[in-house]
Length: 226
Image (cartoon, rainbow, N blue to C red; front, side):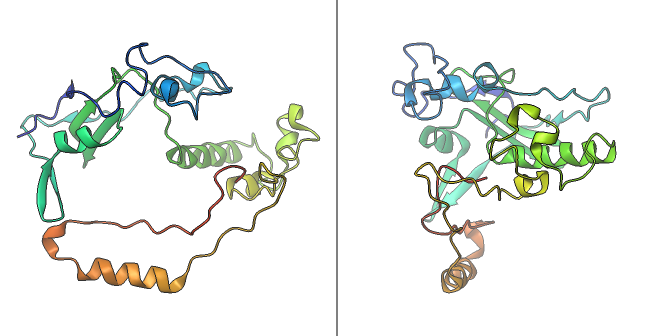
């Protein structure tokens, strides 16, 4: 059984490589993303490195309850059962939060992180940004999604991102060249590849407990999209 409380796991994967001896230092704008020695510190302190805007929290937040009973959390892979501890021992996870129907079933942290840290959310932030833009549009703080970014951020006037419309920015379709100066065509999915993936999912036994499968286009550019 795993008790659904916030407590640290054992030794985390690659913790020495990720900066444990130095106290998980925070990087700079130049190295925060690529330097593994500062990645943990940087990914939980991005607001100390990069420009940001703080959205005021609700005065009436929706509180999450915590389950009173212990929760057995496990998964199966290649006909073997594994626990949450097994998963954390294999993955570079700084924070793990499992919520079901508004109830916290498990909350775990590694690499000396805790609930007070602000973790980088990567693509999850896109949903929050789209909600914020929708609210700004409803409140007339943005006149139109077809306005350019520079209309609201004059500092970006003359910059390719500033000349991009809000609508296209939300679609990650700015047209800004890649780091090598080229404008890459968005890779297309191979329909046959997708079909074979679906067939593979359908062939799995019910006890495999695989709920989704991610299929990505090949050769997707890493820098310059959006």
